[in-house]
Image 1 (tube, rainbow, N blue to C red):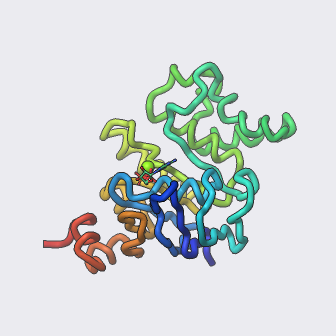
Image 2 (spheres, rainbow, N blue to C red):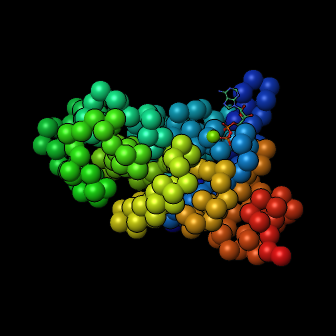
Amino acid sequence: MSGVKLTNVRKSFGSAEVIRGVSLEVPKGSFGVFVGPSGCGKSTLLRMIAGLEDTSGGTIEIGGRDVTSVEPAKRGVAMVFQSYALYPHLSVYENMAFSLRLARAKRAVVEEKVREASRILRLDEHLQKKPGQLSGGQRQRVAIGRAIVRQPEVFLFDEPLSNLDAELRVQMRLELTRLHRQIGATMIYVTHDQVEAMTLADDIFVLKNGELQQAGRPLHLYDNPANRFVGGFIGSPA
Ligand code: ADP
Ligand code: MG
């Protein structure tokens, strides 16, 4: 069963075609990683799945439902942004509650969902603090918490760790793996970092110039790259 399915998805900005007919399937409940060099179209693809960008062609399905023309809030997806996208003047609690309040959720529901997310992310002790009083890793967990409270079918991550230092990135990767195991939702993670892709992915999707080069298990791609590009990018065995 597919969590997210793209069929011949295309995107042009003016005369520039940046996504050139991408078809792929991220199995339900799995951790999929879109990897490729800067400018290959990873963010554009993710934004189309989120509904933040229109498609120029093709279809997008989430949990078997065609959502190509569905508005973002009704797709069952939540995007995790880099931690600097938090509201600095709001507490951790209010940052996580924000989207629920926008959706006019009842006070008790907001409370319950924020408590649940903060338990999963081990932020219970920090709910009254402002983002500025937290460590980089804690701030990133709050950014993830903002997605968790919405209980999406699919989590979308666009290079969420790229502004963290090396040690913290390693730690956050482990956190993400733990989170995925605990929540069991479909997750799609975008990165230009091969190591990150290899460590996190159930399946890797390698992109170049708006085209899918190869999809499969990390070790399968490592051992059997479909072409020179994939071999060079993933790091072919000696
Ligand atoms: P990546 O995330 O892999 O670095 P992007 O999806 O951001 O790549 O960009 C893919 C291509 O689309 C790039 O050439 C970029 O310049 C172009 N692009 C992205 N967004 C826009 C836009 N809003 N208008 C015009 N071109 C864009
Ligand atoms: Mg990008």
